[in-house]
Each structure stands twice: as C-alpha cells, then as structure tokens.
Image 1 (cartoon, rainbow, N blue to C red):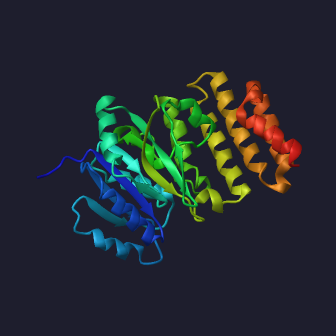
Image 2: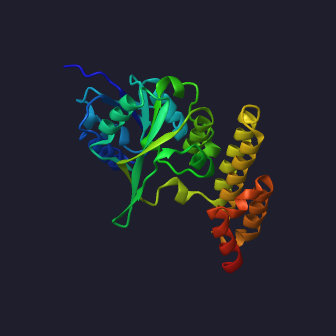
Image 3: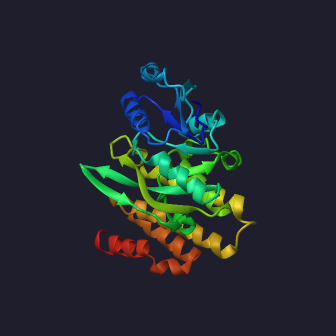
Length: 295
C-alpha cells in the first residue's frame, strides 16, 4: 500500500557516517510512516556516501551527492527534490523520538495546514537532558536569539521556495536563524510544548568550533540583511528592537572572551542606543554583571 508523503525530512551530511546512520535509524522507528528522508552528502571526503547504501532498500529514503558547498546549499538542494507538503531539516547532532512525525501530522491537521510551526526539543549533554520547551507565538523570541532547533521546524514547501536558506559561507552556523528571522517577519510562528527530538552535544557543533570573529561576522550579515530586506515593510520601532537584540547578542558573545570586554561594552552601548528599553532585559542584566565583576 502506498502511503502519501506528507513530510520530507532533509539531512545534509559531511564526513560523519556514524552520526547520519544513527539519525536515520531513529527516524525509521517513527510511529507515522507518512514521510520521506532525503540525505544530501555535501562532498564528503571519507566513505560516508558509500555507508548510506545500507538504506538503499527503503523506498522512501534517497541519497544524493553534491560538490562541497555549504550546509544551506545542501538543504536547499534536498528541498528541491522533496515530495512532501512540509519540509523538516535535521542536523547530524540530532536524534528523532518515535513521536516526531506523528505529533507534526496532528499539528498540521489542528492548525489547518499552517505556513510553519515548531515543536520543542531536549538538549543532551554529559548524560544529562535539558528540556527546551517553547509554547505559543515565538516571533519576538526568534528575533532575540536562535532559540529553536532546526529539527523542530516544519515549513510548508510553497513557503520555503520563496524563503530558502542562505548559501553564504560566512553565515555558516546561523543560516537557520537567518531563515527563521525572515519567516518570523512574514508569518505567525507558533511553537508547541511537545518534545520530539534530542540534540546531542559534541565538540563538532558549529557554535563550539567558530571564533568570535566568525560569530561576529555572521551576526553582522544578519543585521545587514534584516535592515535591507524589511526596513520598508515593518514598523521602525520593531526594526530598532531587532537591531538592539542582535547587537546585544554580539555583546554577550564577546563577554565570554577575556580580551573582548571593550568590544562587548561597545555593542551593549549600540544595543541600548538602538532600543533603550533593552536596558532592563535579562540579557542586559547578565551583561552588566559580566562586565562589572568579571572584567
């Protein structure tokens, strides 16, 4: 019996055959089977692509190999081949719980085919699990931080085709946040408290391997794109607030480096100048403490 494909799960991979196999195996345990898996090997230099042959007998799993580009490009390529009405993207640090596609299908029905929505996740590190639960409208939260996991977002394919991942290498590590911000400007971003995935902490995560210079560069790109793309379509006060949140994000990141305290202070001042009410935010309070007592 042929099952209609409702969800296309896209997995970019590069040189991590064990991780991608573990992820795919977790997806094969799903209660609902109304999905396909598209694996895009982003030019691996080991035998990752060959290892994927173990899944060749599964009719709803397909593997493709492209020239090394960037995770955003690999995701976009996979999305272009998708048969599902909704797209869902996994990274190699992720594991799906068996209720993932079942809960997603229920939310699609409940919300009557929404443009997009998000499911919550848990972060697993040192054999401990921290639940990251988000519920309700999260547009403003997305503007302040990359708080959601890529694997929790389900976006309708017709919406995604107008709002793809950036393929700018300098944005690597924040290309998902870049997309969520653009989508949050245009659509109501609803999140649900159900946890359907785990993120497994490891030393290869992009947030751990990039320098402050790289982090600052990608946030600068976010600032530039937000101001260029949406300055005419949203209220000035909202744009100021978003700029302020991004400046404070750079400030917080810099505060963790001993030799970046002046830069941290500089961006905190920029954040306050852009939107003075950020003075009283939780992040600002943390920054005051870090700058005053951990100088």
